[in-house]
Image (tube, rainbow, N blue to C red; front, side, top):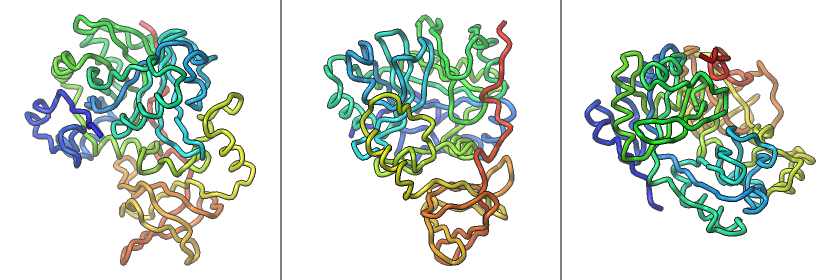
Length: 366
């Protein structure tokens, strides 16, 4: 598998970044500290290098190309200028990848995929598209920055002179940036008002430098991105969801359009009918102790499941997490999270853990 490199490595080194566990191809873990970056994003705005993500262009209508059958979301009725979150599934309903699809025009779509799944996703698309010439992998020429936080719109409009306030949640438009015409979308993975800015790899470093001249904006890394997304109970591919887990089990059924045909539909319908499968649950610890990946979940002394994600939540000052269990649990029910000699008392709760996010804030169009 070819891992996508980021054009911003030298910039990260200048800022004292510690590179991620996979080396330079992934965003740094932190710049000034995970908790500091987390809190700054919640109160102000942060800039994330997400150039490692993958992007595909699919030319042709979803019916002509067969794309409609490959994804779980309805592309036919999707308005131009909208983006939608959904999945590519295997025949058993397992999640190959969670994706965001952009409808650029009636016969042109962009699909954004996870970095580690670029090769697998391209292979899956070429396997199922009616003509694989309809697909162009633009991942290695396109960069992307994620500007997140309550001040994100103000910063884009003041620094870049672009009308970001015209965008509603999960919409996008084409803007002129540094001599290029490219996409800005109002999306993100932090739970705050935010935007993703696409630009060629040749220009993305310059955009990074220009934006960070604004003192209201600071760089943030993989660590803060993880704590921010977990406070919103957003799943991490490869950890909370994978090709052996279905959207139904993951509690992500709302991103499935059962009125249309798609790969894995029959498996999901069968699973919904039987309703005898593991289910995703969310929990808060009774202390600041953080549960970790693969801790076991116990109820009344019985092992009923496992933790997929867990961390200390800077926003609510306690341990939080999510995982799968094979029993029906109710909000407020006590559980124990165990790993060898470690035991953490926790309670089942609903999602998200953090409920003051500004992601769907109504903006005044200027």
